Length: 405
Image (cartoon, rainbow, N blue to C red; front, side, top):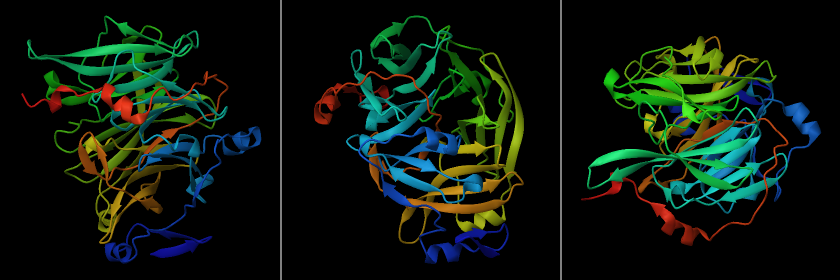
């Protein structure tokens, strides 16, 4: 059943046909796409009004600001022109800082949107296609970036993981010699910062390929123990999707972790949130579960876990938003799907056409990647772009997956 609420079309849970959407590739539009000023900033009045309802996301290699009112009404996305010279593939947020990772991990930019400050960060030696990143801070509030990658040692035919820390205050990298890392963190998994530490989903081959949660403690500069997730999954091995996000409970400063688990074979998916989360322990509560059946008739599906997945939870307003691709007969679009805590599909938002882009030597359309945002006064000492894009590409190392012999 379809109804109209203030100009926004909303579909109920039972009678929306896939053909209706295919006839009109512009699925329900509640978004206004525009362009921002050369430097985007958030005034104190806007900060007070927006609160937790401010996100950043990357689509088609560009960064956008996403804002919405309660219940995802009047959502709007605007391109951030400040970063338009960079083709961005991933975003990470911590304490008001947004780390922008360029295509194929070729460049890093640290950005404070509130202060309109950016810093271009070069490598200690070289960047790698297998780089993974995280942003956090220690107990002294020293902000840092963790970077690690797979180093294939040919003569020994084995892989070692190399870890580095970038200290924002000193503007320098250093190698971490001993890191007690258990399990494998795939390149598609994005770590999520909560209270200064970063949490990852990791595979553990000794446990029948099951996945668990691990935390990198930026004070100890070590990983904590494996933490159980509130479900059984085999991320990537049978098509399950497991991905993380963060949110602020009650609109305050109580930052918590959220996880999306999508069952490929059964077609359901569910969102869980932490009641408490620390590097050594976490407790969980199920936020919502979406059953297969009527919703699958819309042509929606969770894409492969290797696309990364992206979502956020608004606990106060009792809904979650999942960002995915939606394909019609004529084109594929970026879309946001809104689900109520009661398990009902509430609405969808067309965020624009999804372009076919090359990433890690593969051409494909990719879902939007979103990160939470909370303004801060953390200073980022600005600098100019270090080198041209064409020159920087010569410093990107290929990982072992691309060796032919």
